[in-house]
Length: 164
Image 1 (cartoon, rainbow, N blue to C red):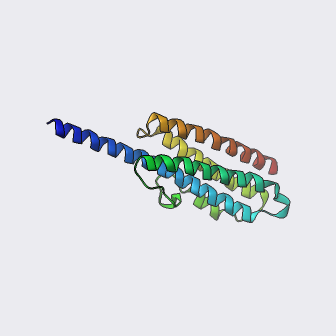
Image 2 (tube, rainbow, N blue to C red):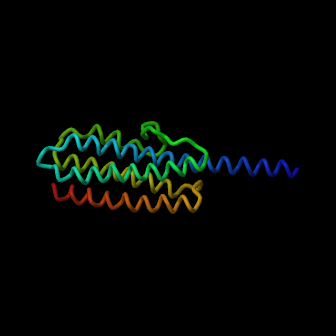
């Protein structure tokens, strides 16, 4: 009987670790989407909008750092780091839609699309924070990242509003 209880607890712990890794997996994918979205936005910039280049490069760098932090945590949980985007992910597919909406290629439409992607990232982080599968230490990491991404969101929104 004691062996059975121990095995059962181990299986629940393993299941919880997999579920926590799944939540982090979705966040890595939304950050991969974010990187792709900003890379697309960089290509669509006109010469007069080169001031946005540094903003977009910083957002890309931010998502790469987030991906590294979350990736280490996923590996600690015994899972592999995802390399794809959220196209098949559970949280959001918004950046894929954003990439398709860069039709106007003007400053305002590019910034509006970036803000839309940032909104999707914020929703993904909110969803992750509501998950019952994240241990407290991971919730703390996710909350800090959400707040850092929120600063970029607000900056993009401010730039978009000024471009109207």
